[in-house]
Length: 194
Image 1 (cartoon, rainbow, N blue to C red):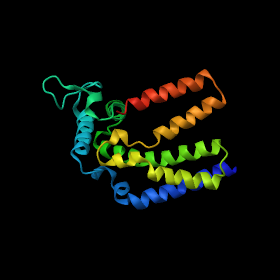
Image 2: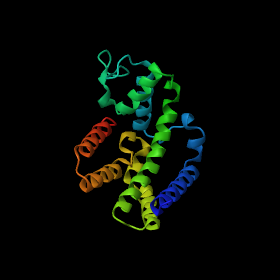
Image 3: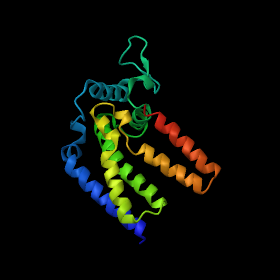
């Protein structure tokens, strides 16, 4: 096994342990807890739940601005996230009662993803695996996006910037149309979070 993989597995183990210790209650019962205590946070949970359970379309939210409704982008429900749950609930199996838990777990998973992408970027620049793991761990914990867990959930995904940096570094190494298209598609998908 290469040193890069050993460092990555060590980082993942340490991050998972830290996330478990720090957010144990949320991990053990993700669907029964709300992250944050702000009005914005409550509104974002309620728009997500209402849209997944009751809206008849994927583009309009009928829970406010009666009788016209509101476009999903303006409601902070994270349209691509909400519509993925809505689609699965309507066509595969019902996840609508688990939307809060899925949302909460994805927020915590974003911290892990942040550390992984930071580590991969540092390894691209030939930092030693142990050093890259330590710095990636610290950067994931200090990412300013985690301060948005109080209510601005669409802005709290800390993995997005490191992921785009990783994709861009890969593009600079080997400039191909496929990599360029991947970066553009990633930006489009991420833009649908907020």
